[in-house]
Amino acid sequence: MLLTINRFSAPHSQRIAQGLRSTGIVNLFNPSIQTSNDGFCVAFRGLAKGTSKPFQGFLARIDNETAQIGPVLNLTKLLEPEIGAPVCDPKLFRAGSRCWLTFNTGHFERPNRIYVAQVEPELGPLFLISFADRSEIEKNWAFFEHDGLLHALYSISPLIILRETMRENGVIHFHPLDATEKDNISGSNTFTGQPQLTIGTQLSALDSSGTLFGLISHRRHYLRGKRIYLGVPTTLHFERDGYRISTGKRTWTHSMRALLGSSTKHNPNLFSCTYFSGMTVIENKALVSYGINDVDFSLAEVPLTYWGKTDDMREKKGA
Image 1: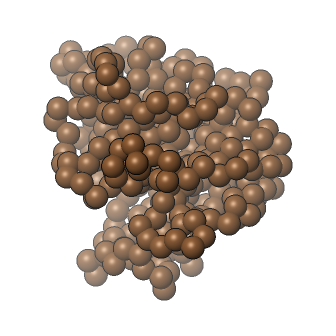
Image 2 (image 1 turned 90 degrees about the horizontal axis):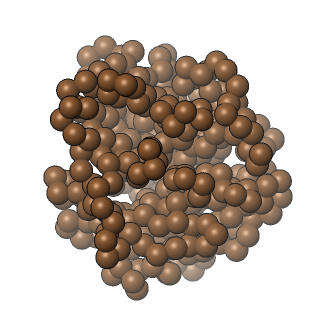
């Protein structure tokens, strides 16, 4: 069943969207929103005034009342001299009590690189991510903290979860969860056949147990050889005998009009996309941010029932 998610637009998310539009960034898209200790952080892609492609990465801070967006930090301008490559696909997640940033170097090098860094109280030192069995081009890992260690959802199908094994000299090394845990994996979803889900947003804790996380994954369809991206609410469960992925019954698009694509095509292989890039939990809702066909963006406040949650959340935002 296809659901249009723009129906969940609310005054709170509209204020954030209006603030982002006031930043002066051209072609702002794929925002990733996350709670911070004094409000929200948002990472996104776009172009600073007077610049041209490739797109740049940015980071902005919003106060608790979503009344003011602070100075926008151009991540590409700041970090490219250090890493020698552009900042691509910036996304935010929480680890412990702080907000973190992750990004990659796109297709500008082979193999490319993935980095993470704290963003509060200020942007911290970069950590390079290391995984021996990685692909040449890596983009979307969903990072989260579990049992005091950084983990990453590396793949949904097949289900692969990585765990931090060591930090040294600015590098965080990852390894798949051990064979005993893997032997007990049970994967389940409500789709028939092979849905071919890929990672979209970062993971957000759905309760205080540290064992239940939600994200929005992407389901790809093809029309005349071009890709269509739709969202799927997805839940990661850590259990005594392993871990599993479950998905909702619906797929999401911003609107039926957005599903038809845009006349501007930054990616010639793309027909249309509602690209879910951010999710954070506030009270009993998920504040979701997403890009529309690589040319626009929106935010929505979605009930947690779409992730199978029926009880009140662990805490209220800012409590």
